Length: 610
Image (tube, rainbow, N blue to C red; front, top):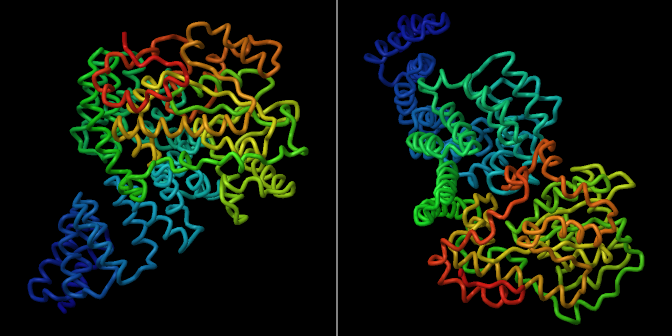
């Protein structure tokens, strides 16, 4: 080892003269090319100088010299990630973990690489391993929450958010990422507080862009636009993430103003940055929506084909058991009870209608969000946004060793009360329901959980939202869903049609056998004669004053967060623009009309486009 040269290089490094330290290290390595200490110092100095490519080369030398040292492989992976060489970085991280599977820092850095390239399923698994190793460290919890959300697992995402007592100690970048995770799970006020404080303290452009995104997402357009203007002067730099976030806000705000030309331009610039597959998918969904509004159905379908290709790739990575299977993606839709299994006696101790939730069900994109917001506007009702509370009840039953729905009759009174108590505990995590108010439980796919509703809330009132099957399908096909099951079933119109029919047949089958108290509301009737339909809802629920229902859009505008894809549409006055929207797309629907025919006929819908 060339001790004088090493000493000089080390002194330069410790004094912050990183380029000089790198030069001294290279000089010394000319005569001692296998000196581990010099190579390590060279890698550190190059990285500190911003020369990540040279740092990667130095760490690669260390892995050749000492292939048994996990830390060298981990550092090589980190440098290659910074150099945007993801395949090589992944190989280095995998090699490091094969040598030391329990290295927390390696797991988190590897997870960030996978997050960068949109491999959310694998990233989630890696972050969850890191959380298991050290549950107290916030970083893996924050990124585990983000990736769980991207995988459609909102429950896990919410559970992973680190305690608020740890937030103040986080560095600004991690606080910004925490704010994203908080917004994903609906905790928008806390997300805003974090971002606003950091904007005031640091005036960081990317934090400002994130705050603008949050304001747009929560329908505060007048506050989002000025923030975007503060960011624009910084977009000529090299910060790719800043550009991606700013362009996302830019095209979202342009869409709000119906400035489709500007929105297209912003999206084109964004796509030129080669974003992750999920961002590309969302951009193509947005372009499809613009083409639809401009009356170009063929162009819209072209963009949708691209979007669904990206999404199906994501679904195959996140949930290959669903995406790559020929089975129905919504497996519960194929669980049908026999007439004998439905002959359970209604629980005499079951809650009264007033003490039961009002359930709003229907295939997604059938108008359920509008109905939820109508009831939430009434002082007697409180909504909790879309939750999987009934699915939790099913899981509780299955944990008892009983098959759902076949063995619902085997639940005793104590079992039923235990499941109901669990239901209300889950509700309490989301919203407070005062004793003089009733809960509105809106989850479209609870139409597949009718047997559980009828068993634990036998006297509950249910509103079934219907809409023309082709309009439902088109709206779903144009929607950027995060659930792997919905990414899969929407991957083609044929697969979507079969899932729609399976779901509706599941409802029709169980409604006939279980005879719930149901009000059927057709979307077309609601938008054509809104006042009459609000009176029907009021009569069904025993509401004396229907006026609150009619003013739902102003109430929705005051809500801090609406999680469903129609968060912007519910602020608009009721209109019939979405009725018969599928007509210009008829040639694309022709092959699936025979699939839809029986169910459409059951509800009295005409499949002609005359």
